[in-house]
Image (tube, rainbow, N blue to C red; front, side, top):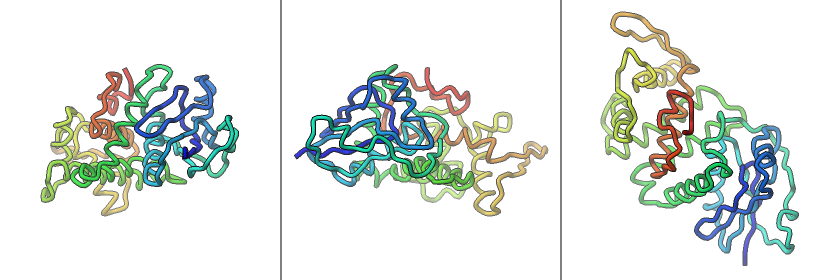
Length: 281
C-alpha cells in the first residue's frame, strides 16, 4: 500500500524521484512555490511524498535534508493512506505553529533554473545519511545535523549556533583524518579543508577569514568565557574579533563541507562563497 506524506515549506516545481519515493509538487508556478516556501510566519503545503515503504528514519532524514536546502525549517508529516485522486486535498493547505527562523537563504537554487540540482543533492545526502558505516567512520551525521539545527531552533542563539557549527566541523574533521589527539583543533580542521580544496591556513594574519585559528579563538572564547569577542595578538598588534563578524563565513563554509562530504557538485556551486557571499555561478 502506498503511503502519503505532506511536505510543508519546501520549494519545488518539478517532481523529485528517488529510490522508493516520489515527491510531487503542489504547483509548477515558480513564484507561487517560492512564496509558499519562503513564508516565515507559516508552513504552506508545497508537495506530497508517496512511496510503498516510508519509515520514520527516512522521514526524519528527509525533513532535515529539505530543511538544509531551504535553510528554513521544513515539515514532513507522518504517513497516511489517501483515498482520493486529489492527494493534496487530503492535507491541510497551511500549518501555523511558530515562526520559522531563516538560515540566510536557500543553499541550492530553484529546480526551475537547474532542473536536477536539488534532486541530485537529496538523493546523494539521503544515501550518505542512511549509510551507517560511512556515518560511523566520519561522524557525518554530527556535522550535518548540527548545521541544520542552527536554524531549526525556535529562537536561535548566536553562541549556540556558532558552537554547533564549529563542533560539528571539528568532529567530522577528526573522524575523517583519524586525528583524536591534536590539542589544537585548528590543525585537523585546516587539514580537512585543504584536502577539500579550500584556501585556508591555520594562521594567516593578513587574511583572518581564511585563518582557521580565527574561528578557534572565538569558539574558545565562547566555551571558556561565554564571550562573543576575543582580543588576539597579531605580530605585536592587538586585534579584536567578534563572533558576529565571522558567523557567516563559518556557516557557509560548513554548508560547503556538507556538499563535499556527500560528493555533490552540480557545476554551479561557488566554492569561494564563504568569502565572497555569492553562492552560485
